[in-house]
Length: 112
Length: 114
Image (cartoon, rainbow over all chains, first blue to last red; front, side, top):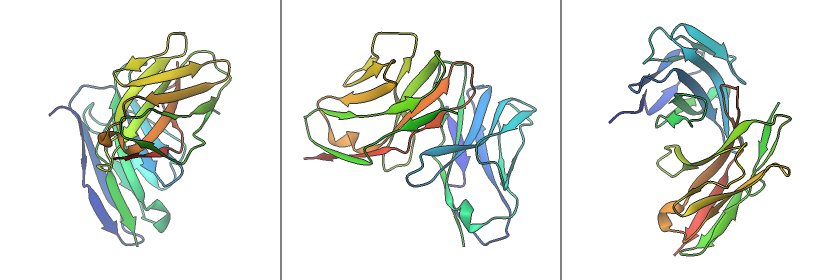
């Protein structure tokens, strides 16, 4: 089915390890974003992209890197995992200003 | 910066009854969009309904409708004939007309009682 695909769905990391959360969409959407969801805080924007080769920081970018080499893919890299990065991560994409985001199914990350 | 507030962390409703979830937001802009998202236990974020600020008419989608009060900066969601499948976290979200990204509220957890 068309949509946003995130992998993995679950991950446990040790403090200091690095990893990449994968995100791919097949809807030819220009806009893609990464959010983290923490209890009582809703979703907070980490990084976003308005097209291939263009990325920018959101509300909580520290400790994360992104790149957008193609329209389809928007990976999120954790450089050196910390327990504060334990969260559920969502990738989302959309097209046009009016439309809402289509979300991936999320990645639950635990850093121990 | 814009903020979105959902003052009800948890709510419950009897099956087949009607429930209203509240959302208020703070902005100095005149043109923007508002959304309600549903997150069931599966964790998937599902768009429920959206509203353009320049439209006075309240949006409706089947059993879901909104009460949009622009002057009061209020955007409540009404669910009619509640069903067990409506049980979920509900998030209110704001996006300015020329902005790229959403601002989400903290969410309201809705339980539906049989």
